[in-house]
Amino acid sequence: MFNIAEELTNFKPIDLENIEQKIGAIPDDMKNAMELYNKALNEISNKNEDIAIIALKKAISIYPEFYEAMNLMGICYIAIGEEENAREIFNKVIQMDDNSLRAARYIKRLDGDISDDEFTQTRRIKKLPDKLSSISKLVSNELAPSDSKTGLFKYILVFILGVLITSLIWIAVPNNKVNIELSNLFNKPTQDAKRIEELEGEISELNSRLNEAQGFLEAARENEKQLQGQMDQYIAWSKNLRELDKLYYQGKYRELVVEIEKNLAGLDIPDVIKQEITALSNEAKPKSVLQFYETARSLYNSNSKSKDLDTYRQSADEYRMAISIIEELEDTSSYVVEIYYYGGKAIALSESPSKEQADAEAINCFETIISKWPNSVYANYSRARINELEAGKTIKH
Image (tube, rainbow, N blue to C red; front, side):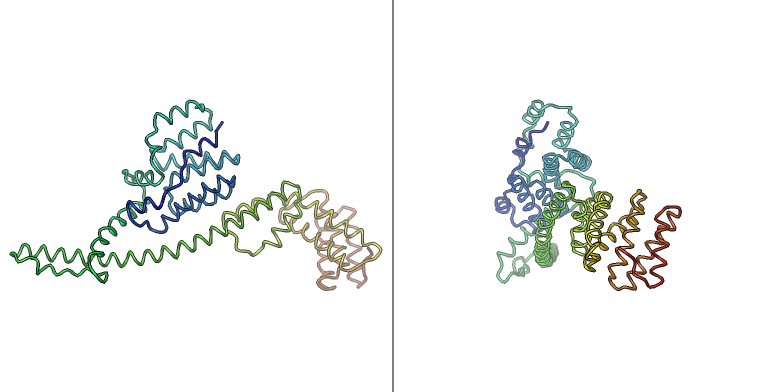
């Protein structure tokens, strides 16, 4: 088995300040990916692996070849007991990176092909790569030959070097402009003049690239704000998802479906969270039908003497939810005919949203019974209720 605490010691925060001192400014989107990685490590230390996974997914979406983040996400999945997701992540690292020794060893450990002692010895023998910092691994992976179409990080490295070279020229000259009069420095034959012209063209191109870089950095800052907003949204929705999970595991399927169908409908939910909520709803709906029916019947029976319209409306709404799920799932359980019959009665007696609309909806319930269960006793009852409603009579409780 994995020793999660021991494995996490192999993942260290990225020292962004130290990196910037050595190579200069890092583009904001790449910097944001590294900050999300550091944030994930902090969440893990606070036992918030689910939030850490969300942060790592955002980091990887910014930089798809962030292998260290992918390995860490795999460890997080193992920590919360989702080994299949961990295995999928490690396999993805292996497919993307031929040198992904750590991910390969994790897969072997999940399969039981290597013990903790053997894994520790192997890690000690091949310690040199693990001593590299997270950013060094990213750089070394990107500098190695690769057929990948994702050349983002290579571009960023070349871009940073270009900006550093330009900055040296930029700092040396006032007013942020490179405007060196080279013709006064040389007084040589045509060959030198031609070289001077080439250099002036290169300087002009560097100035143009510098302007483009400034625009790029402004766009990156705006992108960082948007990513931070999305991250905050993910954190908030992850809490909502945990509350829905609690309802499901407590067997409160009716409350779960009501929360999703009524309270969360139409809200702007992140796609990843939305998929989880949809999956949870699909699991709960078949189990919620009987709970809606029981609640509706209880309300209906409690109103036999007072015949309060508001209570009939509450009962009718519960029946409507049960019927909508039955029709969505094409449920054919034995109790379905009862739900249609008593639901039709509750809807008719509720007179909601109006008496005419309620009568029409109730008749539709009774006609469904006659159509689908023509030989049942409820079909006979339904014909009698339809005759009463069409004659303008109020059906009995």
